[in-house]
Amino acid sequence: MSKTVDFYYDFISPASYIALARLTELCERTGATINYKPMLLGGVFKAGGNTSPVTIPAKWEWIQKDFARYAAFYDIPYQLNPHFIFSTVNAMRGAMWALAEGRIEDYNRAMYTAAWADGKDLSSPEVMAEVLNTAGFDAQVVMEAMTQPEIKKALITATEEAVARGVFGAPTMFVDDEMHFGQDRMEWIERALS
Image (cartoon, rainbow, N blue to C red; front, side, top):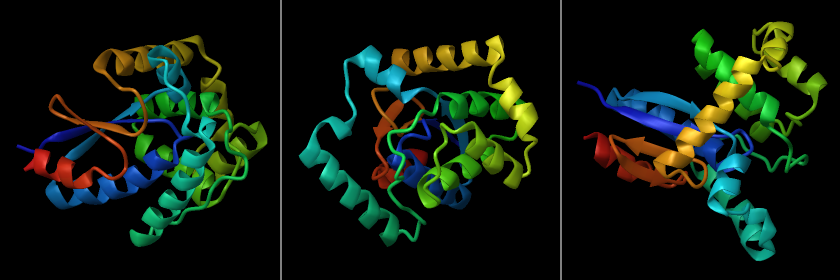
């Protein structure tokens, strides 16, 4: 019986982008499945009293270099987004819609590529529409869904559930009830899957 990896993420996190690229390959190789768990990282930070690494200049400078080095090593297209820190509220609401519609993998791929390979501003409605249409979505349908109360509530609930489970940042992954944090934990996840 194959195992499942719960993947908690927000498109604002370059570490989540890198992690998902590696996790996808790992799950294809091991037969595991990914259970996508969209959340708002800002809400998680607020609930836990945490702050973004951007608030610590020396740490942020190092992280930028480390992500670029890590992505290059694993041949993952990456650039620091010139619009960082951009709002991902609507993009994450769209993820809730895509999850309900069974299109989450295509949606995640489109959003992460736009943000961290192409350096696009996901907080811009015009950019979102372009990204969605290019990826084969009907931008009007998705962007309308982002405004619906049930989608907004679903994202709030998902974020609260992440916090209740102990999530404090992104990416956070669980195999069974064992938590793994960060893009550099694939070896431990693979052990947990075996």
